[in-house]
Length: 195
Image (cartoon, rainbow, N blue to C red; front, side):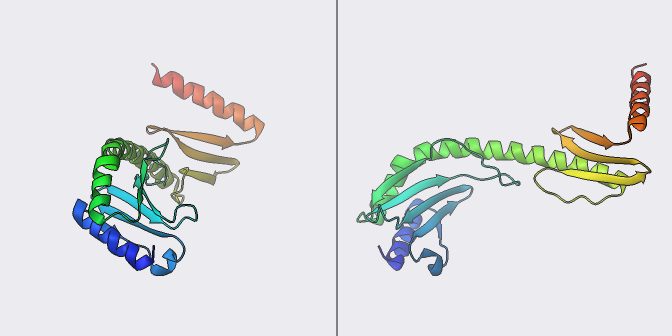
């Protein structure tokens, strides 16, 4: 299947099922043609050109990722294969009949999972930002929110990171004698809090 023929067919399929076709550049489709059909949070990937399946369109449901790039769904892919000789109307019917009934319920679960993951990450980042502001250090968002605090108290270094949504944990780097003093101080604070 030539690239333009692929694009024309997939655009027509998209119109029939109420989705917009999104294509990479023609240069990116030299050996392997692919596109996404999109509507709201639905995304269906259509591809052709694998050396084993020149006569097939591979159609699969795509799932969102979290703000940290984590997958929202694990397990077997939800996909179908259809002949490239089918008309856009036949391909559209195959998507509606064979793919969507499996894909849409899984997409709903994946969206819920992504929303929960994003809330979790946002809470973790808010906690560590609060600590960074308090200690006057820069926070750079990454996959594991943490900050390093050195030279704020002579002889004391610390790594502060998030621990779940609600807590932070910190690691102290101190001399042995100071370690004992820090633990004695923490015990005293804890006893006063429990009075």
